Image (cartoon, rainbow, N blue to C red; front, side):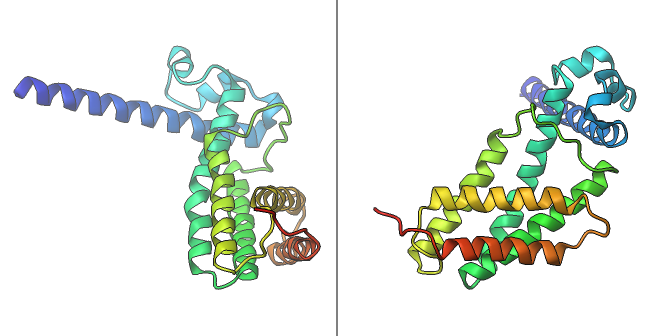
Length: 206
Protein backbone atom coordinates (compact mmCIF):
# COMPACT_ATOMS: atom_id res chain seq x y z
CA UNK A 1 0.00 0.00 0.00
CA UNK A 2 2.80 2.37 0.95
CA UNK A 3 4.58 1.72 -2.35
CA UNK A 4 1.34 2.34 -4.28
CA UNK A 5 0.77 5.62 -2.46
CA UNK A 6 4.36 6.69 -3.13
CA UNK A 7 4.00 5.86 -6.83
CA UNK A 8 0.76 7.84 -7.09
CA UNK A 9 2.35 10.80 -5.33
CA UNK A 10 5.31 10.72 -7.73
CA UNK A 11 2.98 10.56 -10.74
CA UNK A 12 0.97 13.47 -9.39
CA UNK A 13 4.09 15.53 -8.83
CA UNK A 14 5.33 14.70 -12.34
CA UNK A 15 2.07 15.83 -13.91
CA UNK A 16 2.11 19.03 -11.89
CA UNK A 17 5.67 19.71 -13.06
CA UNK A 18 4.61 19.19 -16.68
CA UNK A 19 1.67 21.53 -16.24
CA UNK A 20 3.87 24.18 -14.64
CA UNK A 21 6.50 23.87 -17.39
CA UNK A 22 3.90 24.23 -20.15
CA UNK A 23 2.47 27.29 -18.45
CA UNK A 24 5.94 28.79 -18.03
CA UNK A 25 6.56 28.39 -21.76
CA UNK A 26 3.21 29.96 -22.68
CA UNK A 27 3.73 32.88 -20.29
CA UNK A 28 7.20 33.49 -21.70
CA UNK A 29 6.01 33.21 -25.31
CA UNK A 30 3.20 35.69 -24.74
CA UNK A 31 5.75 38.28 -23.61
CA UNK A 32 8.28 37.46 -26.33
CA UNK A 33 5.73 37.56 -29.15
CA UNK A 34 4.37 40.81 -27.78
CA UNK A 35 7.80 42.45 -27.59
CA UNK A 36 9.45 41.04 -30.70
CA UNK A 37 6.56 40.01 -32.93
CA UNK A 38 6.03 36.48 -34.12
CA UNK A 39 8.38 36.71 -37.08
CA UNK A 40 11.23 38.19 -35.07
CA UNK A 41 10.96 35.79 -32.15
CA UNK A 42 12.80 32.48 -31.94
CA UNK A 43 12.42 29.41 -29.77
CA UNK A 44 15.61 30.41 -27.95
CA UNK A 45 14.11 33.79 -27.12
CA UNK A 46 11.21 32.01 -25.46
CA UNK A 47 13.46 29.59 -23.61
CA UNK A 48 15.58 32.45 -22.23
CA UNK A 49 12.46 33.80 -20.48
CA UNK A 50 12.05 30.51 -18.60
CA UNK A 51 14.23 28.40 -16.32
CA UNK A 52 13.95 25.46 -18.71
CA UNK A 53 16.62 23.91 -20.90
CA UNK A 54 16.39 23.63 -24.68
CA UNK A 55 15.74 19.91 -24.33
CA UNK A 56 12.96 20.51 -21.82
CA UNK A 57 11.24 22.95 -24.20
CA UNK A 58 11.18 20.39 -27.00
CA UNK A 59 9.56 17.88 -24.67
CA UNK A 60 6.45 20.05 -24.92
CA UNK A 61 6.53 21.94 -28.23
CA UNK A 62 8.30 21.35 -31.52
CA UNK A 63 8.28 24.94 -32.78
CA UNK A 64 7.20 28.49 -32.05
CA UNK A 65 4.19 27.82 -34.30
CA UNK A 66 3.02 25.12 -31.92
CA UNK A 67 3.46 27.49 -28.99
CA UNK A 68 1.36 30.12 -30.74
CA UNK A 69 -1.35 27.54 -31.42
CA UNK A 70 -1.27 26.56 -27.75
CA UNK A 71 -1.72 30.21 -26.75
CA UNK A 72 -4.74 30.50 -29.05
CA UNK A 73 -6.18 27.31 -27.57
CA UNK A 74 -5.59 28.57 -24.04
CA UNK A 75 -7.50 31.77 -24.78
CA UNK A 76 -10.40 29.89 -26.37
CA UNK A 77 -10.63 27.53 -23.42
CA UNK A 78 -10.78 30.40 -20.95
CA UNK A 79 -13.45 32.22 -22.98
CA UNK A 80 -15.87 29.27 -23.15
CA UNK A 81 -17.29 29.60 -19.61
CA UNK A 82 -17.62 33.37 -20.11
CA UNK A 83 -19.70 32.75 -23.24
CA UNK A 84 -21.90 30.21 -21.47
CA UNK A 85 -22.51 32.62 -18.59
CA UNK A 86 -23.71 35.30 -21.03
CA UNK A 87 -26.28 32.94 -22.50
CA UNK A 88 -27.55 31.75 -19.14
CA UNK A 89 -28.36 35.30 -18.08
CA UNK A 90 -29.80 36.50 -21.41
CA UNK A 91 -33.57 36.87 -21.79
CA UNK A 92 -33.68 37.18 -25.59
CA UNK A 93 -31.55 36.72 -28.71
CA UNK A 94 -30.49 40.35 -29.00
CA UNK A 95 -29.50 40.43 -25.36
CA UNK A 96 -27.38 37.32 -25.78
CA UNK A 97 -25.65 38.61 -28.92
CA UNK A 98 -24.87 41.95 -27.31
CA UNK A 99 -23.63 40.40 -24.07
CA UNK A 100 -21.55 37.78 -25.87
CA UNK A 101 -19.95 40.28 -28.25
CA UNK A 102 -19.18 42.71 -25.43
CA UNK A 103 -17.65 39.92 -23.36
CA UNK A 104 -15.53 38.79 -26.31
CA UNK A 105 -14.25 42.29 -27.00
CA UNK A 106 -13.40 42.88 -23.34
CA UNK A 107 -11.65 39.52 -23.16
CA UNK A 108 -9.66 40.36 -26.29
CA UNK A 109 -8.59 43.74 -24.90
CA UNK A 110 -7.40 42.03 -21.71
CA UNK A 111 -5.53 39.48 -23.80
CA UNK A 112 -3.87 42.25 -25.78
CA UNK A 113 -2.68 43.80 -22.53
CA UNK A 114 -1.26 40.43 -21.51
CA UNK A 115 0.68 40.26 -24.79
CA UNK A 116 2.01 43.76 -23.94
CA UNK A 117 1.66 44.79 -27.58
CA UNK A 118 -0.81 43.96 -30.30
CA UNK A 119 -1.06 40.28 -31.00
CA UNK A 120 1.01 39.18 -33.99
CA UNK A 121 -0.80 38.47 -37.22
CA UNK A 122 0.15 34.91 -38.14
CA UNK A 123 -1.92 33.76 -41.08
CA UNK A 124 -0.07 30.50 -41.62
CA UNK A 125 -0.39 29.25 -38.04
CA UNK A 126 -3.33 26.97 -37.37
CA UNK A 127 -5.72 28.45 -34.81
CA UNK A 128 -8.63 26.03 -35.13
CA UNK A 129 -7.68 23.50 -32.48
CA UNK A 130 -10.03 21.57 -30.17
CA UNK A 131 -10.74 24.45 -27.78
CA UNK A 132 -11.54 26.86 -30.60
CA UNK A 133 -13.78 24.31 -32.28
CA UNK A 134 -15.42 23.84 -28.88
CA UNK A 135 -16.17 27.58 -28.79
CA UNK A 136 -17.90 27.23 -32.16
CA UNK A 137 -19.90 24.26 -30.85
CA UNK A 138 -20.78 26.28 -27.75
CA UNK A 139 -22.10 29.14 -29.86
CA UNK A 140 -24.03 26.74 -32.09
CA UNK A 141 -25.49 24.94 -29.07
CA UNK A 142 -26.82 28.09 -27.46
CA UNK A 143 -28.22 29.26 -30.79
CA UNK A 144 -29.98 25.94 -31.29
CA UNK A 145 -31.36 26.13 -27.78
CA UNK A 146 -32.49 29.70 -28.37
CA UNK A 147 -34.20 28.67 -31.61
CA UNK A 148 -35.94 25.78 -29.86
CA UNK A 149 -37.17 28.11 -27.11
CA UNK A 150 -38.34 30.74 -29.58
CA UNK A 151 -35.74 33.27 -28.44
CA UNK A 152 -33.80 33.26 -31.70
CA UNK A 153 -34.92 33.19 -35.34
CA UNK A 154 -35.26 29.70 -36.83
CA UNK A 155 -32.29 29.89 -39.22
CA UNK A 156 -29.36 27.59 -39.95
CA UNK A 157 -27.47 27.46 -36.64
CA UNK A 158 -24.19 26.28 -38.19
CA UNK A 159 -24.09 29.18 -40.63
CA UNK A 160 -25.28 31.68 -38.04
CA UNK A 161 -22.64 30.59 -35.50
CA UNK A 162 -19.92 30.86 -38.15
CA UNK A 163 -21.17 34.29 -39.24
CA UNK A 164 -21.41 35.66 -35.69
CA UNK A 165 -17.92 34.45 -34.81
CA UNK A 166 -16.46 35.67 -38.09
CA UNK A 167 -17.94 39.17 -37.83
CA UNK A 168 -16.92 39.51 -34.18
CA UNK A 169 -13.36 38.36 -34.86
CA UNK A 170 -12.83 40.67 -37.81
CA UNK A 171 -14.29 43.72 -36.06
CA UNK A 172 -12.21 42.89 -32.99
CA UNK A 173 -9.01 42.84 -35.06
CA UNK A 174 -9.78 46.38 -36.22
CA UNK A 175 -10.92 47.55 -32.79
CA UNK A 176 -7.71 46.61 -30.96
CA UNK A 177 -5.61 48.50 -33.49
CA UNK A 178 -7.35 51.78 -32.67
CA UNK A 179 -6.45 54.25 -29.98
CA UNK A 180 -8.39 54.72 -27.86
CA UNK A 181 -10.14 51.36 -28.03
CA UNK A 182 -13.92 51.85 -28.07
CA UNK A 183 -15.61 48.59 -27.07
CA UNK A 184 -19.09 50.13 -27.03
CA UNK A 185 -18.84 51.43 -30.60
CA UNK A 186 -17.42 48.12 -31.84
CA UNK A 187 -20.19 46.23 -30.05
CA UNK A 188 -22.92 48.44 -31.49
CA UNK A 189 -21.56 47.96 -35.01
CA UNK A 190 -21.20 44.19 -34.65
CA UNK A 191 -24.61 43.64 -33.06
CA UNK A 192 -26.30 45.80 -35.69
CA UNK A 193 -24.53 43.89 -38.45
CA UNK A 194 -25.54 40.50 -37.04
CA UNK A 195 -29.13 41.39 -36.16
CA UNK A 196 -29.68 43.31 -39.38
CA UNK A 197 -28.37 40.40 -41.41
CA UNK A 198 -30.44 37.83 -39.54
CA UNK A 199 -33.64 39.56 -40.62
CA UNK A 200 -32.86 38.79 -44.26
CA UNK A 201 -31.86 35.13 -43.71
CA UNK A 202 -34.03 32.30 -45.03
CA UNK A 203 -35.67 30.07 -42.46
CA UNK A 204 -33.93 26.79 -41.79
CA UNK A 205 -35.45 23.69 -43.34
CA UNK A 206 -35.61 20.70 -40.99
